[in-house]
Length: 194
Image (tube, rainbow, N blue to C red; front, side):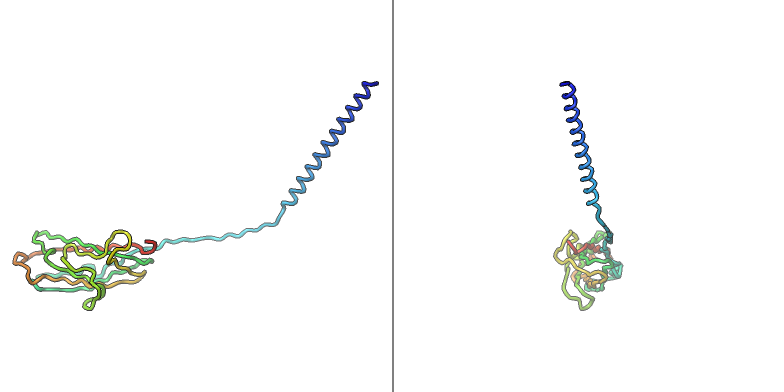
């Protein structure tokens, strides 16, 4: 009989534990269900887009493309030409000019002649950008960034320069039939953030 009482008491404890476990499990499921129900909210979204297009830094054709064609010049002769530099890009640019002269006859006419470059149209141009020997004529500096005498042109605008050459009166007889060719190179860069 004692064994039966111990077995009944153990059986009751097991039943209570099972009921308690079932109750805890049911409570947990109810809480999760309630939590899941509380996470249900209305939502909405909208989209926006962005678009980017890079600008351009572009020199137009230098006009005229042949700055000078002077033949049969004699000591004391001079000439001038208005040269137009155009910005056909979408951004403001800064430019400089360098030159290279060739003297295939080795007489050195480029070093003998002088060149003056001024801002503005000939004959009433303004500030002088360069005056000196035709060989090595330049203004500004093509190195990146603002340099002395670099010129600035707004987008879709242009600038006139007056090029004036002189064959000096004191030129020696050795320059007879001398010839030279000079290439003027205009190099541009953006001004924004530079």
